[in-house]
Length: 228
Image (cartoon, rainbow, N blue to C red):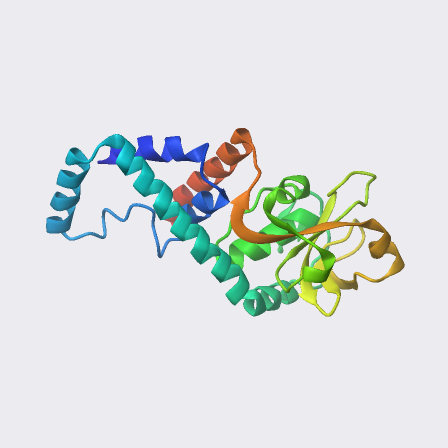
């Protein structure tokens, strides 16, 4: 059974959206909850696995992750208030490049990644340019709390990211010498550098290598949790 799980997972990595990776992190909803299944159900599942053609099992896996994607989109939308509240709790944490925890500081993308992982268990790519390929593109007029907003701050597209909080404002970790704060999208500096927005709906345009990198991070986090 374990070898089948590994084989199915490796085949899905290249084809599944980011929801696949996120699902692996949700401890309350493990992808293959074999250990939590009664013995009788375990035996039955093994028999089904033996009798079911590989292609149909693969299709079943795709359907499973499609359902996960739907729940994920609902969780981002339905929990936007909680997400924003968690982000607000980090206000004042100093900017520190390439740091990933509030205790040591947070840069622009690690702030966003920390909030989504801490509140929703959603693992985002590490770089803002990669985040810009997660979810679906939306217009400025369509912005809702919890959406990601991107800026060109280094003469590079999508070089900075923040979280929209409503009322034309967003929260972010701006730059060296500053700390996490709320700014207005309509201010001259940020309005001029606005680069687009994304809504996390379980889809992505990541490459195979980027998906594999996220999967490796998921597995690392799972190993850490087992050692706690």
